[in-house]
Amino acid sequence: MENHKGVPEHIAIIMDGNGRWAKERGLARSEGHRAGTENLRRIIRSAASQGVKYLTFFAFSTENWRRPKAEVDLLLRLLAEYIDRETEALHAEGARLLHIGREKGLSPELAAKVRHAIQLTRNNDRITVVLAFNYGGRDEIVHACQKLIEQGLDPEEITEERLSQAMYTAGIPDPDLIIRTSGEERLSNFLTWQSVYSELVFPPVYWPDFDEEWLERMIAEYTSRHRRYGGLESS
Ligand code: FPP
Image (cartoon, rainbow, N blue to C red; front, top):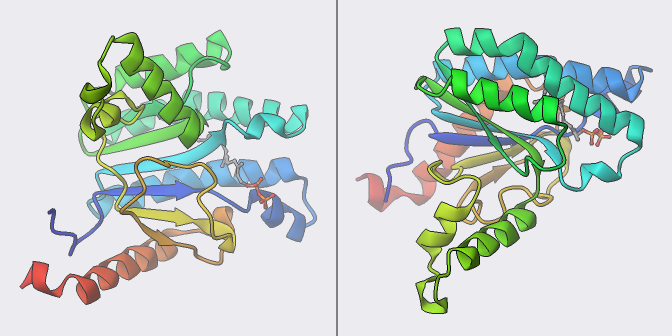
């Protein structure tokens, strides 16, 4: 087993609380989502500088299509703007971008932007930033099963390893630490297959206010949990 004493290799974040952040300030929900989008930059930088190798953000779930159309449109637009605005900087800083989720459902323009960003940054290795967009954990498992059946596998050939390789996350290590901001304590269909051994933390802060200091605190919490329970492993 991998030694978890240090910084987590893969952190996955459920960016919750944008709406409540905005409401508390008398702002429209859209302002919360904008502030939330702005926050990605500082968290990516901070994580990369601490040696985190994979950082996954849950940006849009398969269930989020049920939100009012104006909010869905805004979230899709924010993703497109984010890719337009940040890809070059991420590339310059050595970040590789990946997408997990169904490409189907995204507009051809957005899908093309995502593909371009992935292609441009494919050889970078400082940190991998994974955007979970139009993503659902159960949907991913169903999709993976469909893929294996299409490949004509016999039932006994369906193994955990093959299923893992058929997930959108193929090649990405399972998350060591999952952070959900805003104090809500559930995973909401995020990385359902991959989260079985993840440490979970639920900081009581809305996503736009989750800063470098909070990230450091969550990493320290992760490290301390492993120090307590991993005594034999680390001696
Ligand atoms: C949860 O807050 C947040 C979301 C459903 C979307 C998160 C999306 C972004 C930060 C912007 C787009 C992402 C990228 C990668 C550009 P909520 O609206 O559920 O907040 P609430 O629970 O307080 O209402």
